[in-house]
Amino acid sequence: MRMRRMAERGWWRSDDDIADVADAFQDEQNEGVPVPRFDGTDEEAQSRDALGVVIGISAGLIVLLSVAIVMLWVWSGIEGVNIGGPPSALLTWEEEYRDLTGFNAVGGDGGGVVLCIVDSGIDLEHPDLEQLELAGWLDAIDGIEHPYDNEGHGTAMAGIVVARDGLHGNAPGVSLLVAKAIGEEGTGDDEQIADAVDWCVEQQADIVSLSLGGDQGFGSGFFSTDALEQSVEDAIDEGVYVVAAAGNDGEDDDGDVESPGSVEDVICVGGITRYGNIWVGSSEGDNNGRIWPNPILPRDNPDKKPELVAPAHEVPVLMAGGLESGTWWGWSSGTSAATAWVSGALAVILEAHPEMQREGASGGSGAVAQMKALVMENSQMEEGQSEHDDHYGYGHLRVDLLLQALGNSGDGSSDSQTSSADASYARTLADELQVVRRSTARVPPDSSTKPSE
Image 1 (cartoon, rainbow, N blue to C red):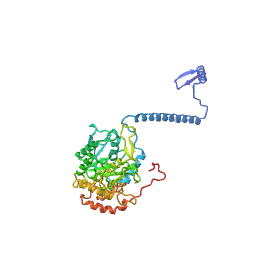
Image 2: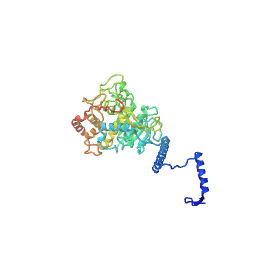
Image 3: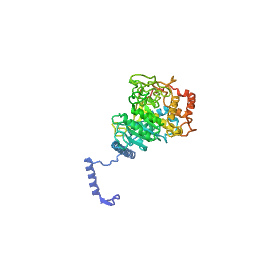
Image 4: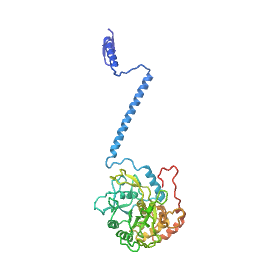
């Protein structure tokens, strides 16, 4: 009997044992149990091995990808978790508006300036507002002590000024006060809004931003019986810059801008598109005066309405969390957005010129009048425009030109202290910049995927 060494196992078997194993091997084949076969060349065997490895890896990756997709879907549904950021279209539109209004040509972030937004509140859980610490909060409706926004408009307006990380606010360094005077339905009572404005003044606001409007009080322009208009006038007398929306009835215009934008020394803001054209919904001012239905005196420069126009069509904004939108970022059209843009611009200007702030060396109602003169002389007019237009105002916002007129480029430092005498200098410089102020509305390229204007 011959012995065959089975070294792999370290033991021995007889020839009969080997025959029994071979028979069992054949039985397994007949029963369909897979066994290795080596009836080809070494290269073919290696190819089959490599193909098996590739197939195995691919299957594993597919499984991992499927699991990752499911996990992301579940994760995105968890409250407070944010995946990604604003759509690229919103970032592009934001950049176009920054170019159009001159923000990309200046520095500064509004640091040292107190800005108060009177609106529907603010959602501080928004990912673009996580770094924000409010300087003050008032709920003039329900008296709730912690900030919230159950309508969403206030968060959108605040984001235009102070957003960070996703969208980029135009004055994120301001000390922000927020007063809630607009309710869940998107409306507010004149008395509550007036109380909110009074609170802003008490909290030492330099700027009050009112992205809201309504009917003018009886006798507006002669005297006012309207509580909000009275509060606004009192704020301006204290040296507070009040910015308000012109209104959104341009396609069915009632004849004038809304209140409190109609108040003489308020900076009233209409709206434009990304191409510099007037936004179709922007309200038209009545600057010739009227007797009926509500008497209005004729308006003179620099107080013709609206004073200027700013971004108002498809403006990138923050969306308050927990609302039906289901997203953190979106866009809004209206002169509300234009108002917030101008409020942020004023903050950048006052940062560079603290002497024009409410408590500055040249502050007070005279500084407000000086700022309005600067707006009149240094806003960018449409092609062919040479004076105030009832729709386009004195032109569209150019924060860079306003800063140039004041003697610097907006890097946060002032070359000299500004006094009331600088208004005449601003007018002289504005004449030199007249060619720069004129522009032709831009036209989108043929390949543009943006919505038609």
